[in-house]
Length: 554
Image (cartoon, rainbow, N blue to C red; front, side, top):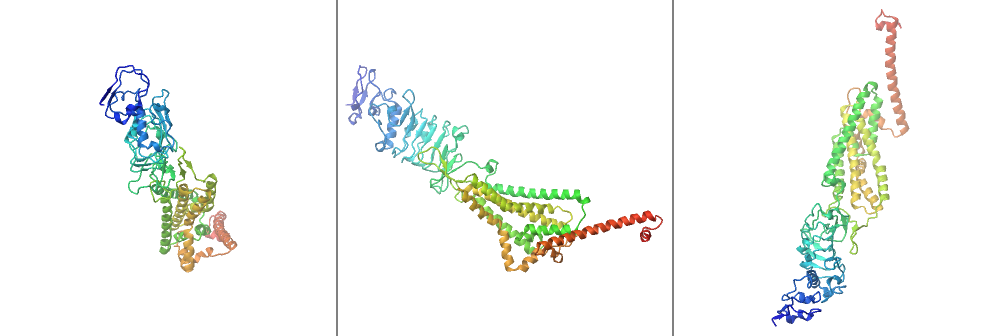
């Protein structure tokens, strides 16, 4: 049979489903003009090329045909819930997990999560012009994601996570109404095209835009790149927030770049503090008498501030001591930079230590943070930093203040400045490094303490090396510590012979010695003042005599 022409009659009821059988595959079935026929036509007949009503939406809705294609391509016979699907006469809006608008004509929701879908996703998915919610997650769909999905301009919810899609993600730039896009748990690669700035997706919550842009990736070559994703997951299923850090929001690319500005800022602050001390000293110079005791006390304080550290060598003139101190400082900074590099918030870098703390599960649209670190851990962290670093910060500032005192020679003030500056640089860099590293990897209150103690050990490296040198050769350490050049002017000579003030082992004797030096200086000042008074008095008593004779007469 080539043609079955039943046009312009008064047939009623359902069109026989038998017309859609295989034996009519090459037959032209013509039924126009039978207005009393029931709607819709049999589903199998709507796929018949020779059926003259197949383009009539009232008999053969295009969305019903597209649902049939979805069912066939995704192996619907293996689905766990498919009641009503492919029924010859059942309206597609009554098929299970299919929701339509109020007119029961246009599909708005396809809710097929964890429904046993496999095979591939049909390209006719774009036929659902009013589709707002598409959930195909937690299935086993394979192959590429159809390019046509980018034409679903009304789509607000697209979740295809936990499937086996491959290839690249098609452009979704026209989906400006999209509020949630979750692509993780697949095998996509390449770069996801950026969304438009006015896209609602970019204004959503933390879980609104998720993909497998984390590290390690399923592909070493051409991993998935997503600059706008709010959360990136890795091959292991762990996820991390892809939000910009405060450093990045300030215009810096990463912590490594910011650290150089951090160094410059610390050095500038040190210069400013020393300069303020110098200016203040100039204002008070007319009211302050230079005292050998004060000078020696400042020098002693500088040595006590540095303590048993190789930084002590920077107060001297020994080239070997300076070399050792500079090498140790360089080692400390380089070791700290290892932790700075590991603290980078770069989810696509395998070389960072970033801990992925978020879990994006199959049964929820919201990701949860599994980190147990809370405010109590940060309070303990602050206490630990304060107890361990604050003394060095204060001592470094005091040494910078001493660098501005005019009673010391220029070379001595320079050494004070370098000693205080290096002490502050290392101390504050340890604080910076410890903070950002804990933000990157600490997931519990105990971890933040352990991480801090490890990094704080680097801060003590100068003391450990000083102890090693002292154990090897105490005389060498003493020579480098006391080889301090002579100063000029009214400042005292700072040589080993004058350094017995630092050799006291008993604190009481040291204080008594300091007090005696101050008293001697006071008596010298009083002696000068009394001599001037005697000369003035002699002049008044014998104005005719010379001042020397008048003084003798008196």
